Each structure stands twice: as C-alpha cells, then as structure tokens.
Image 1 (tube, rainbow, N blue to C red):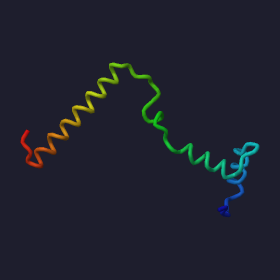
Image 2 (image 1 turned 60 degrees about the vertical axis):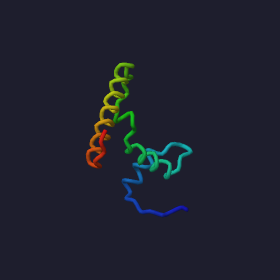
Image 3 (image 1 turned 180 degrees about the vertical axis):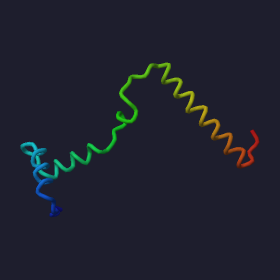
Image 4 (image 1 turned 30 degrees about the horizontal axis):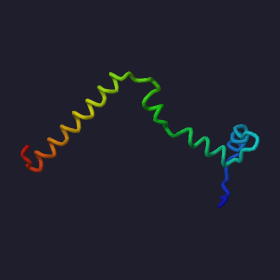
Length: 80
C-alpha cells in the first residue's frame, strides 16, 4: 500500500540523482537502505581460506563446544 511522506527539497534532489531510468523512488530508497546492512563478506573479509586454516577453525569450535559441555555438566552435577 503506497504511503505519502514529506522530504525536504534537497533530499528529493539527491534521490532524483540516484534514480535510474525505470526505477521508482521506492527502489532508490530500498537500495540505499540495503547498502547500510553489512554483508557477511564485509564482516568476514573476502580472503579464501586454506584447508589447514579451515581445519584450525573447526578444531577451535570443537574445543569451545567441549568446554561448554563440560561447564554445563559441572553446573548440573553430571559425572563424566
């Protein structure tokens, strides 16, 4: 459902400059909003990891999981 919003003249002009042929103002606003969301590749980087690096990460996750399970068992009084 369309909504009417008020924007200042300078914002309208800026949006108009961003608008490509065939795009609506909603498309432009949506595109600008999506640009603000971080992408996983932005957070993690784009480096290709080696198999050894990947295995190291898996080992670290496994060790953390085991530590968490041991702590949980200690808190619950489980003997293992």
